[in-house]
Image (cartoon, rainbow, N blue to C red; front, side, top):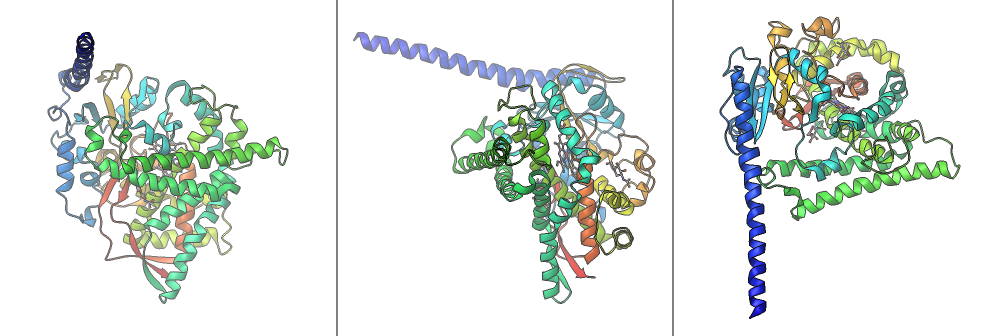
Length: 533
Ligand code: HEM
Ligand SMILES: *[C@@H]1O[C@H](CO)[C@@H](O)[C@H](O)[C@H]1NC(C)=O
Ligand SMILES: *[C@@H]1O[C@H](CO)[C@@H](O)[C@H](O)[C@H]1NC(C)=O
């Protein structure tokens, strides 16, 4: 009898705790963060004349974007390729035209209030002048982001970020990059030889979907430059990451991820698999690192090596703590993951769009090839000075990155109220710089902004557009892409190697549909016709 009373009292207590907890969650998550905060931020912005669609609980404008994107046919017209925004960034295509002349508007990504900005001056004020008051605004999924992006530079701000950035910066200076040219050339060899064989067997001309091979080329180049003698194992890291990324993007496409908190912690088969792959990446990287540390400890060699990993190890402090302010061994692991993630899909997709533009603009293909033949010559002796003389190739690459902006948006969470010259942005708003809209804006690029015209870069970036922040394919401010020169060298080498061997022709089987999964990519691959020269 007594024990029954006890247990019912216990149950009451449990019920009170549970109800209080649920009540708190509802108050905090739904009422406070989900409704009150967006409405409060909206009021502050509207008072200043900022326009935008109404706030909708709980998804904001996300469902509208999905419907809008699904309204497009499988193949979108190629002749208007300059306007990426409908299929890549629906928020611009939907709302900028609704508020003609507006340089910014407000919308909601779920319950997050976003200020979309297409004014490079404001981008400069926020990303450069107010860098210290910004936070990262990432997708919430920490565990898997750990496997893919790593807790390296991209995910960091503040003290820890500046320590790491200072430690890593020198490895991406022109001097250091000079020593990587050879590895970059070597990294293109396998796939290009494969294409040569296919073309030869087919009697001099063949259609090849180069997407998967381009992905491998960029993975190989990173393996060779970052992991040098350990590049085989490095390539396994690359392969595992590629697989993990694929499953991760698959998960992003489902509804569960967006509505269930900590969705990836739910023990589904695919989630477990992703976790295993993230673990495998860590194990592989630890093996590579331990091997190098061991060799020096045992006196087999006195250097950690001259590749990116070796350079990082040389300057890293001992220790494995993620929380430590030092650039330590854990930082080396996290940034190694990051280089693969940040440096592979970006470069590979940029190279695909460059190839696409070369097939569609044979006059530029001929000019670029003529330059390559002259500058690189028959010896194929690439070095840093040869690359710096590839000007037409550089113009073509830049014009491609303007048109097909690989990172079409740049987002930051304001960690403090920001008072700009003409605008007040309260803490908690995410600023979204519309890079690809600015890259197409006639105000900064002239009436021919929608055309593919590499000649606009003939006298460099400053002469090509009227605002220094109107061309920012690699971002802007202190967190500008650390690999930007690395990427440009790599792209020049890939383009040169291909142009020396093949004539590139468009394929009737190409289905044009640029889309965005973290980076801008051609949705259905890139079949092109390669003809032996
Ligand atoms: C065409 C190729 C590439 C493009 C378009 C690109 C674009 C970008 C952009 C826009 C950012 C800034 C993101 C932000 O501030 O929110 C960034 C950051 C970064 N990128 Fe790249 N990237 C490319 C290639 C590479 C390569 C090859 C590497 C490394 C080998 C790399 C490593 C990084 C890192 C580490 C950061 C973070 C820097 C920091 O937060 O301090 N990227 N990239
Ligand atoms: C382009 O990027 C997407 C998404 O990041 C990736 O899945 C795809 O493999 C990339 N394409 C290439 C050629 O690497
Ligand atoms: C291409 O753009 C980069 C900046 O992303 C710049 O440093 C380089 O000079 C540009 N090259 C040409 C030919 O405009």
